[in-house]
Image (cartoon, rainbow, N blue to C red; front, side, top):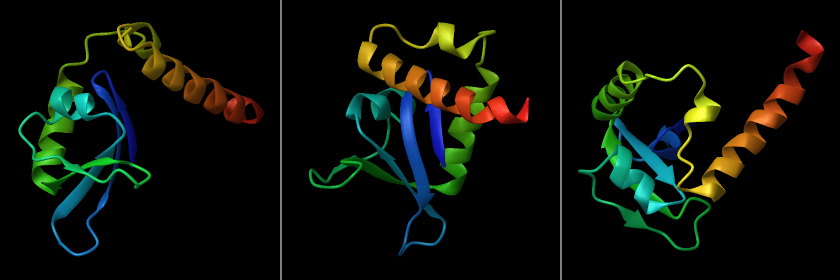
Length: 106
């Protein structure tokens, strides 16, 4: 699962060796501090996603549910943190590509 939150971007997958544990992966450790502040971060410099944390399904589900309940914006694009311009630009690029993808289905 790829997920964009106000606090950052994550790739979340099942851990290969640990049932019940998700591997939450990211590119910026500050995103973990914002969304998953209590996790132990693992740094794998050569990996596609160099920052990761092993987190139980229930904790990830709870935090994502909390993020959902905290939605107070009417337009996500307008509420993305402008303090991190590179993340904003990346999110807008993804939005633009997905907009183009959806055009044939209008």
